Image (cartoon, rainbow, N blue to C red; front, top):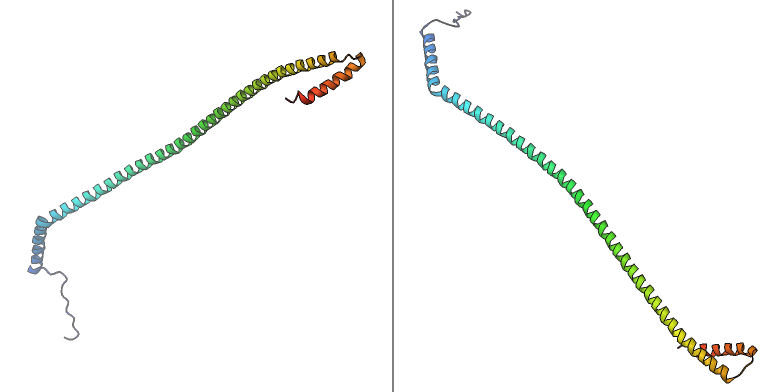
Amino acid sequence: MEGVVVYAPLIGLDWTLVMHWVTVLVLFIILKKFFFEKVHKFIEERQTAVQDSFDNAEAINRKADEKLNIYNQKLANIESEGREIIKDAKIKAENQANWIIEDANKKAEDILAKARDNIEKEKQQAALGMKGQIVALSLLAAEKIIEKDLELEGQEAFIDKIIEQAGASQWRN
Protein backbone atom coordinates (compact mmCIF):
# COMPACT_ATOMS: atom_id res chain seq x y z
CA MET A 1 0.00 0.00 0.00
CA GLU A 2 2.40 2.22 -1.01
CA GLY A 3 0.55 4.83 -2.70
CA VAL A 4 -2.50 4.66 -0.59
CA VAL A 5 -3.16 7.40 1.83
CA VAL A 6 -5.37 6.76 4.77
CA TYR A 7 -7.51 9.55 5.95
CA ALA A 8 -8.62 9.80 9.54
CA PRO A 9 -11.77 11.66 10.30
CA LEU A 10 -11.31 15.09 11.88
CA ILE A 11 -13.97 14.56 14.48
CA GLY A 12 -14.82 11.13 15.49
CA LEU A 13 -17.81 10.33 17.64
CA ASP A 14 -16.40 7.95 20.13
CA TRP A 15 -15.87 7.77 23.83
CA THR A 16 -12.61 9.67 23.71
CA LEU A 17 -14.37 12.78 22.51
CA VAL A 18 -16.97 12.49 25.23
CA MET A 19 -14.24 12.04 27.85
CA HIS A 20 -12.43 15.10 26.57
CA TRP A 21 -15.61 17.09 26.91
CA VAL A 22 -16.29 15.76 30.39
CA THR A 23 -12.70 16.55 31.43
CA VAL A 24 -12.93 20.09 30.07
CA LEU A 25 -16.29 20.56 31.82
CA VAL A 26 -14.93 19.27 35.16
CA LEU A 27 -11.83 21.47 34.83
CA PHE A 28 -14.04 24.45 34.03
CA ILE A 29 -16.21 23.87 37.10
CA ILE A 30 -13.16 23.39 39.33
CA LEU A 31 -11.47 26.48 37.93
CA LYS A 32 -14.68 28.47 38.22
CA LYS A 33 -15.25 27.35 41.80
CA PHE A 34 -11.70 27.99 43.02
CA PHE A 35 -10.02 30.45 40.67
CA PHE A 36 -12.38 32.46 38.48
CA GLU A 37 -14.10 34.22 41.37
CA LYS A 38 -10.77 34.99 43.03
CA VAL A 39 -9.25 36.15 39.76
CA HIS A 40 -12.38 38.15 38.96
CA LYS A 41 -12.37 39.66 42.45
CA PHE A 42 -8.65 40.46 42.12
CA ILE A 43 -9.23 42.13 38.74
CA GLU A 44 -12.13 44.19 40.11
CA GLU A 45 -10.05 45.26 43.13
CA ARG A 46 -7.18 46.15 40.83
CA GLN A 47 -9.51 48.16 38.57
CA THR A 48 -10.92 49.93 41.62
CA ALA A 49 -7.41 50.67 42.91
CA VAL A 50 -6.33 51.99 39.50
CA GLN A 51 -9.49 54.12 39.22
CA ASP A 52 -8.91 55.45 42.76
CA SER A 53 -5.33 56.27 41.81
CA PHE A 54 -6.54 58.15 38.74
CA ASP A 55 -9.16 59.98 40.84
CA ASN A 56 -6.57 60.85 43.50
CA ALA A 57 -4.13 62.00 40.83
CA GLU A 58 -6.83 64.15 39.27
CA ALA A 59 -7.72 65.61 42.70
CA ILE A 60 -4.05 66.27 43.40
CA ASN A 61 -3.69 67.95 40.00
CA ARG A 62 -6.72 70.15 40.74
CA LYS A 63 -5.27 71.09 44.13
CA ALA A 64 -1.91 71.80 42.52
CA ASP A 65 -3.60 73.99 39.90
CA GLU A 66 -5.50 75.84 42.63
CA LYS A 67 -2.29 76.36 44.61
CA LEU A 68 -0.52 77.53 41.46
CA ASN A 69 -3.32 80.03 40.81
CA ILE A 70 -3.18 81.23 44.42
CA TYR A 71 0.60 81.52 44.17
CA ASN A 72 0.35 83.49 40.93
CA GLN A 73 -2.24 85.81 42.49
CA LYS A 74 -0.04 86.31 45.55
CA LEU A 75 2.93 86.98 43.31
CA ALA A 76 0.93 89.56 41.36
CA ASN A 77 -0.24 91.11 44.64
CA ILE A 78 3.32 91.18 45.95
CA GLU A 79 4.51 92.93 42.79
CA SER A 80 1.74 95.53 43.06
CA GLU A 81 2.41 95.94 46.80
CA GLY A 82 6.09 96.40 46.02
CA ARG A 83 5.25 99.10 43.49
CA GLU A 84 2.97 100.77 46.06
CA ILE A 85 5.69 100.62 48.73
CA ILE A 86 8.21 102.16 46.33
CA LYS A 87 5.68 104.83 45.32
CA ASP A 88 4.93 105.63 48.99
CA ALA A 89 8.64 105.75 49.79
CA LYS A 90 9.24 108.17 46.91
CA ILE A 91 6.40 110.38 48.10
CA LYS A 92 7.72 110.33 51.66
CA ALA A 93 11.24 111.09 50.43
CA GLU A 94 9.97 114.00 48.34
CA ASN A 95 7.95 115.32 51.29
CA GLN A 96 10.96 115.01 53.57
CA ALA A 97 13.18 116.72 50.99
CA ASN A 98 10.63 119.54 50.66
CA TRP A 99 10.45 119.88 54.43
CA ILE A 100 14.26 119.99 54.67
CA ILE A 101 14.41 122.64 51.93
CA GLU A 102 11.68 124.69 53.59
CA ASP A 103 13.43 124.38 56.95
CA ALA A 104 16.74 125.44 55.38
CA ASN A 105 15.03 128.39 53.67
CA LYS A 106 13.46 129.47 56.98
CA LYS A 107 16.82 129.21 58.72
CA ALA A 108 18.46 131.16 55.92
CA GLU A 109 15.76 133.83 56.17
CA ASP A 110 16.28 133.97 59.95
CA ILE A 111 20.03 134.30 59.47
CA LEU A 112 19.50 137.05 56.88
CA ALA A 113 17.05 138.85 59.18
CA LYS A 114 19.56 138.64 62.06
CA ALA A 115 22.33 139.86 59.75
CA ARG A 116 20.14 142.80 58.65
CA ASP A 117 19.38 143.58 62.29
CA ASN A 118 23.09 143.39 63.13
CA ILE A 119 23.92 145.63 60.17
CA GLU A 120 21.28 148.12 61.26
CA LYS A 121 22.61 148.07 64.83
CA GLU A 122 26.16 148.53 63.59
CA LYS A 123 24.99 151.41 61.38
CA GLN A 124 23.34 153.00 64.38
CA GLN A 125 26.46 152.46 66.49
CA ALA A 126 28.63 153.84 63.69
CA ALA A 127 26.29 156.84 63.39
CA LEU A 128 26.56 157.39 67.14
CA GLY A 129 30.35 157.07 66.90
CA MET A 130 30.38 159.46 63.95
CA LYS A 131 28.26 161.94 65.89
CA GLY A 132 30.75 161.82 68.72
CA GLN A 133 33.63 162.32 66.31
CA ILE A 134 31.79 165.08 64.47
CA VAL A 135 31.16 166.83 67.80
CA ALA A 136 34.83 166.43 68.70
CA LEU A 137 35.81 167.67 65.25
CA SER A 138 33.43 170.61 65.53
CA LEU A 139 34.84 171.49 68.92
CA LEU A 140 38.38 171.23 67.58
CA ALA A 141 37.46 173.38 64.59
CA ALA A 142 35.75 175.94 66.80
CA GLU A 143 38.75 175.98 69.07
CA LYS A 144 41.09 176.57 66.13
CA ILE A 145 38.79 179.24 64.72
CA ILE A 146 38.69 181.01 68.01
CA GLU A 147 42.45 180.86 68.35
CA LYS A 148 42.94 182.38 64.98
CA ASP A 149 40.68 185.05 63.75
CA LEU A 150 40.46 184.61 60.07
CA GLU A 151 38.80 186.36 57.35
CA LEU A 152 35.75 184.83 55.80
CA GLU A 153 37.61 183.82 52.69
CA GLY A 154 40.38 182.07 54.56
CA GLN A 155 38.05 180.09 56.82
CA GLU A 156 37.01 177.61 54.14
CA ALA A 157 40.59 176.61 53.39
CA PHE A 158 41.33 176.46 57.11
CA ILE A 159 38.30 174.20 57.77
CA ASP A 160 39.33 171.89 54.92
CA LYS A 161 42.80 171.67 56.43
CA ILE A 162 41.35 170.83 59.87
CA ILE A 163 39.11 168.13 58.37
CA GLU A 164 42.12 166.58 56.62
CA GLN A 165 44.13 166.55 59.84
CA ALA A 166 41.21 165.16 61.84
CA GLY A 167 40.45 162.57 59.17
CA ALA A 168 44.01 161.31 59.16
CA SER A 169 44.22 160.90 62.90
CA GLN A 170 40.74 160.73 64.48
CA TRP A 171 38.65 158.89 61.92
CA ARG A 172 40.88 155.87 61.92
CA ASN A 173 40.34 155.21 65.61
